[in-house]
Length: 221
Image: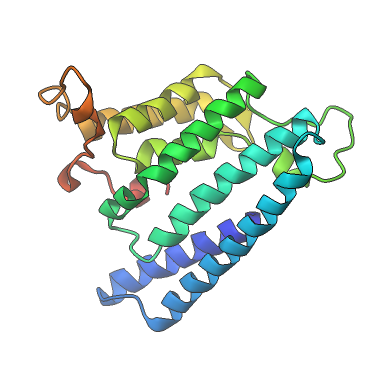
């Protein structure tokens, strides 16, 4: 998954450079790179689904947690790949509400497997898991949901999950990440939902309008 994420970050950077220099639609070369990324993500998912059948009932707890995390990172990568050619179009993320919701559901499931959602090498040998998988946790995908999903109910769950267990995952400090993500949510939403809340909560499912949204490059994604 790491190589695919690195390719997505690089393509996003190239798309932003193209946009600032030319102010036009992305060139064919970047579009082809995006299509190739989408193909590789689809193949990755096919392999993941095949391994799911094997692990069901046979994998250890740590392998089960790694499997959930990989699914979450694939979903996040898919959203990023699908939106990377429009790096300054925050409205593009509204097309991926189902995926944002899936990330939250999977990480809630992960929380039931381990109250502190992180992978630690404890002297055991994990034959089928790379070190990068072992170092993965939920900070990055939860932060991604918190700053890119503009539906209050979904992003609030992401913030609350970040606040539920303070720990560090590589460069990701969940205490800092939780504070930043909550602040971004509060600044963007302001009083938008206060005058719209109804007893059934349906108004909280309305994404905030474009003028209220922070630019992606200011949020780190």
